[in-house]
Length: 203
Image (cartoon, rainbow, N blue to C red):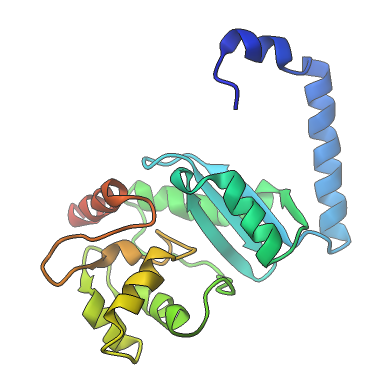
């Protein structure tokens, strides 16, 4: 992104050209939908924690990414791990965007979305699947999460599962804290984790 306003003005496409690009993109998106060629749709949404990238396959929401993760890098990873047919198509993600907005406005305490968990496997996937059972405003230790996933001694692995959660916020790994009470690491950064815990604690 160009942050120099003068240079941005000089290099920006003329308004008519920009409108043409939008129309062509919309036609491409519509055609990809119609022909079943859109494997990963994505959009961005604003949130109190910065811009979030949302991505979905036809099976459901597959990725939520903080800006700190580098959205371009995340899209490249999705292209490698799922399919190169990745396209900005906001409509597929309207429901997810609305529910995330409701969460941050404290109008929603749980998500009701179809999820695609293909980016996690084995024990990590079991850990992630159990995260919604930690209620809104509550916390659980990494030990408790490992135990619930069937491997009480796999505390470090439970931490890794949370640290690599492809669907933060929706699968609430921010509710998993250390046994000492320290909040621990978070994919969006410790500050973001604390803000989510604060948001839910004031329900």
